[in-house]
Length: 138
Length: 102
Image (cartoon, rainbow over all chains, first blue to last red; front, side):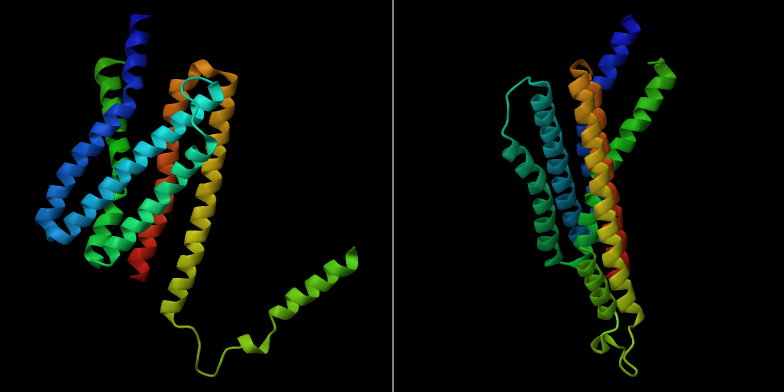
């Protein structure tokens, strides 16, 4: 029973860990991009990371608001607001891509790479969960 | 009811045979044009399939939540990760298109 509680607590913290992995990866890879490809690519990568982070945060909020509406718990947000925020994420990505494209093509590649930050963070989380499952048996 | 549908079918067939769209002498599409055309189709297909996948995932999660509200933390986590990964598939296509076209 205690093991089950520990396991449930561990998996409940997955989203927070993914957020931390995103911040850590963004800092590390920005430094690597700056060292390897100089500032335009690093700037693009940082912008991509920022957009991906906001995107992930809004996705989390939208899903949470949707779950609140379905289970009829928590503060009820308007349906319009939920849909608007869901669509606004794409507008943000488009504006970021356009802004960076007008600066330099090298930073566009950085931006596109930065947009994959959540995927990298999820992969890190999967690796960490695998390690914990093998090492601690959770 | 059948006559209008036959008429529409005939019209659509005729659209494919419009002489204005005929290839000019020595004016065929180059390799670059085909890359651009196929990139457009690839992005459209990727967006459509990702949209369908997101809709299915959301519908399944909503149904699961409505049936069993106590399972909310697990379902919510799976939905967020699923949506993020599905979205990244459309991004992969976009990156490939940029790499091929630009």
